[in-house]
Amino acid sequence: MGTEVLIVEDQVLIAIHLQDLVEEAGYRVAAIAHDAAGALAEVAQQRPAFAIMDIRLANGGSGVEVARQLYLEYGVRCLFISANINDEVRARVAELQPLGFIGKPFLAAEVIGAVQAAALATAR
Amino acid sequence: MSNTEIILNVDDNEPGRYATTRILSRAGFQVIEAGTGSEALRLARSASPQLVILDVNLPDMNGIEVCRQLKTDPHTASIMVLQVSATNVALLDRVSSLQAGADSFLIEPVEPEELEAVARALLRLHRTEAQLRRSLAERELLLREVNHRVKNSLQLVLSMLSLQGNEFREAGAREIFAKAIARVTAIASIHERLYQDNDPLSIDMHTYLNGLCAELARAGIGEERHADLRTEIEPLRLPTENGVSLALIVNELVMNALKHGRPVDRPAIVHVKLRRLDSGQGQLIIADNGPGLTASASREAIVASSGLGSRLINMLVRQLNGQLRIEDADGYAVHITFPLQPAPTWGPKS
Image: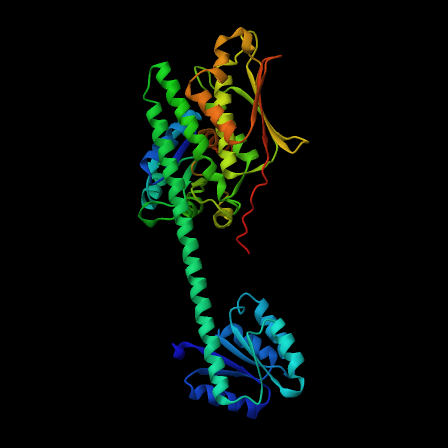
């Protein structure tokens, strides 16, 4: 079975774009979630290899908190995507073994490269 | 307002301390007391007074040193300090107190009216400073939010274009669309890097151009993707607007090389180099190992044609005050030299 990726991104358009890029990288998207509740429900069912996590989510949700739960409860690590990647964000997720950080607006090549590296790092 | 304002009264002489506290209490202030320098420093941290009235002569340490410590500790630096000293040493104390950061100075004995008036003046100053700090913090938050919105919107534009681009089946339309996406990407992607190192006035061309070239290699122009693009970009910082111009030039020339610069007998390689010349000028070279000018009439297009690509290149080179030169000895190379303007520096600390 190939590597499956969970996408957590509240902007639908960006989520679909990310899905295209994950597939271009050669992997399958297990599910797309738009908020914290959706992400937790999907990860319980799908058990993805890793998640692509937007840091600012719908309904005032924090991607950092969702990432913490994914990591502590399911051992799922995240590749973080945000328009505001800074030292503070990096420090807050340091203990969650982040798979990388991508700033918006992202380059497709950058996302594909990071997804491939993340898939290698989480290969079971 | 004054009922929430706390004054810390520091004096080891009990009658003097009592008198000061009495004057200020009667004026309606909440007063707390300390008899030593170390007690004063402890209370300044824990009780967060707005004003400290500080005697110069304290048993455990000099009052001027207490003031210096208050003003260098970020937790207590915003507290106003009114230093008080006896007449005989006043001049020297006055100078060193103010140098140590004291906000005002009084010589004993102090008239009650004057003490109250100076205390009020310093508290007024403290309120103004606190207000300024608050609105500055709000501005910063607002700027971060706007910045976040701008980057998010640019991402939406790029995602929208990319999804739309997948709709086309016909090769010509796909190519035109891919070019549009590449041009928008070159402009938009500068924003991802611009505000990260707290210097939005200049841009590091090394990360910017390497990122763009990786993307161009992936997306490709025409039928072939994952081109062999080799970059040698020196870590030059350019003023932001020059950086965008240069990135757009790189974008056009690389797209040209990918389309027209393919040799028939060997794998295509495109070189992108940016460096600082000994003359102090910057030099950009985009070279391919393709057929060169003579073998391909369409290569003339770069300078002569009226296509958007060549118009952009000519316009942007002019904008950089640069010179464009074409060499086609082995393959085809475009050399652009341009004056390097010193990148303006942003000093948020000053």
